[in-house]
Length: 344
Image 1 (spheres, one colour):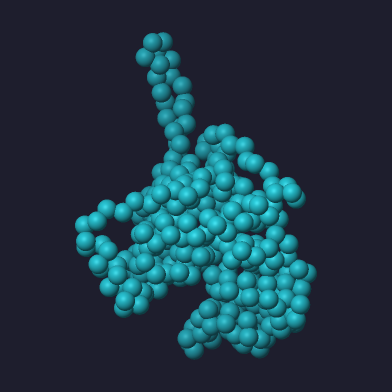
Image 2 (cartoon, rainbow, N blue to C red):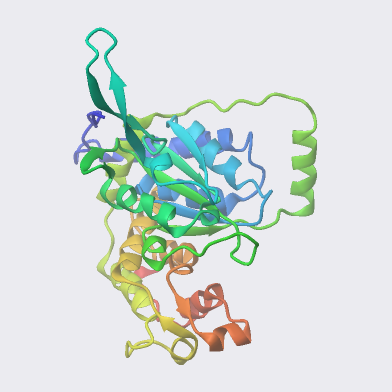
C-alpha cells in the first residue's frame, strides 16, 4: 500500500496551520458530541493521541461508550476505521492477513496472493484486547512500533496515519488476560473511562431512545491529519519543561536517588525514557489544541496520569494498602519541584 504525499510545514506557514488546527478542534468536538455525551477529558486525550500519532488503551467497564468514542473520533477526522473484536479463539492471521493460493482460471497456474487483514486501515479499534491470549495480542506489536506487518517472511508497510485504539475491560473481570509489559509500554496513553453524572446519563437515555438518526460529518482528512502531526513536532519545549518531564519520570524509579520515599515503598519498577518523550509530545499537542504554541508544566501535569499509570509496576505493599498507580502519580506531581520558568 502506497503512502500519500503529505504537505510540508515551513517557518512561513506554521502559524497559519496552528490557527487552522485550533479552529478544527471546535468543529471536531462538536461532531463527536453528536454521539458521545460527557467524557470531556477522555475526548481531549484521544485527540491528543491522534495528533501525536501514538496509540492508546481505553480502560473501563462494559457499556461506557468506549467503542463509540473511538468510532466517533475517527469519523470526525475523516479517517478509515476498522474494528476487530478480540476473542479467545482469534488468531494472529485474523489481524495481519494471510497468503492464499489463487488459481488462474485461464492457464490453471496457481500463485500465492496476500489478502490484507483489518490491520490495514488508519484507525484500528482493537475491541476488548485483553480477552484474547498473549500470542494474538503480540500480533499488534510490530504494527504499532514499525508501521508494518510481516507475513510468511514478507513485510508489508502500513499507510499513515495508523493508530491503534484498544479498549480493555478491568483485569478483575472474568475471561481477561493481562497485557505484557512490553506491549503496554507501546501504548502512549491508558485512558480510564468512568461513569457519567446523573444528568449526563439522563441525556444519554433521551438521545438513544428517541429514534432520531445522527450522522457525524468528517471535518478533515488523512492528509491533513498527517500535516497536523508534523505541526505538533514543530512546537518548542522550554528546557525547564523538558527537564521537569524527565524528573517526573525518573522519580517513578525506586532505584533513582531523586525518587521520594513513597515510591521506594510502593513501586517495583518505574517508567522508561519513553514516558518522558510522551509527556513532552502530549504536552505539545495539548498546548496546540488550546491555541498556544508553547508547552507549560500544567500541560505535562494534566496528561501525566494516562501516560504513567500503566507503566508503573507496584508491589504487594501498594496492593495491601490499596495504593493505585493513579495515587502514586498524584503524589509525584505534588512532590516533584516545579521550575518557576515552566509556569504558565
